[in-house]
Image 1 (cartoon, rainbow, N blue to C red):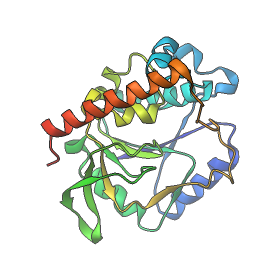
Image 2 (cartoon, rainbow, N blue to C red):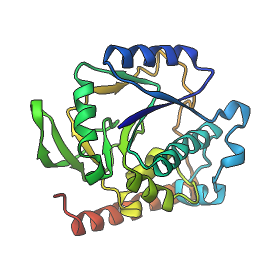
Image 3 (cartoon, rainbow, N blue to C red):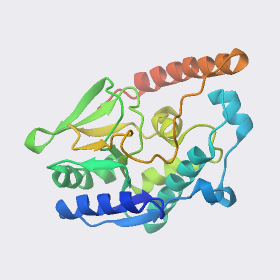
Length: 242
């Protein structure tokens, strides 16, 4: 399984750090140049729908969030068109001892499971699917864990994501978590052997995401949360983890 790291060309320090980490694990990778919002590089390829974002998310996306979505969308296209699975990384990660073994476990299962996450920001309820070697286990989340720092994707999985991403109305990690829409259950190998870098110690491309919402915007966001909750519950009921 090929590994690609989404990275801004101008982030030289990050590129050096990630290259050193892959080298220490004996792993190869290729850079996938991210779309740079500072240079409006995402605009020609953007599928961002601000009206839909306001209706669903209660706020517009930042240019850097749109560029991040465009970068992952390009990775999905690469996966589908190449016909080979991809391990997709962002460049703000720390690889821990044993990560290479986890990556190999994912590579041997990705065609069957289509999407396997190797990191999530939040702890969520899971159901065990398979006991793996060295104490690892393959699980399915009942509620997406947020984050696109590292996940593995099959060509069939990439096609499923692309099929429902004609309009971008939310951050890409929120879309990845909407398994009831694109049909890719949120699976992962636990425990993680990767973490996100300390945001206080590195230059961020997106910045603070939180936006204070009032009035109609607050109502729209809360309505979205409730409709997602129902859709997630119905999907889990129909497709109980197995």
